[in-house]
Image (cartoon, rainbow, N blue to C red):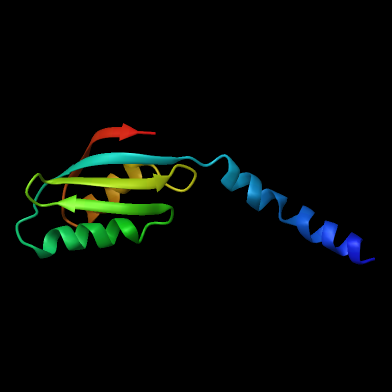
Length: 98
């Protein structure tokens, strides 16, 4: 009986493991306009990091660029750019890599 319960528990979790097994970590670089003070990149970073599947967000006010690493099964470059744009900082994709 114990082995049957263990097998059933593991088998029921298979879809969860399978979903993450095919996910890939990707990186997108965005040009972010409108950052004028030291708080702006903090706001942009915080906004990106609140998104499900985003692992890192590095924002540079001097270059007006943001580099975001995300899980492709959870996010897309377009969704990340839209989220930052809705915050009030127009963001455009400059590069998307695996």
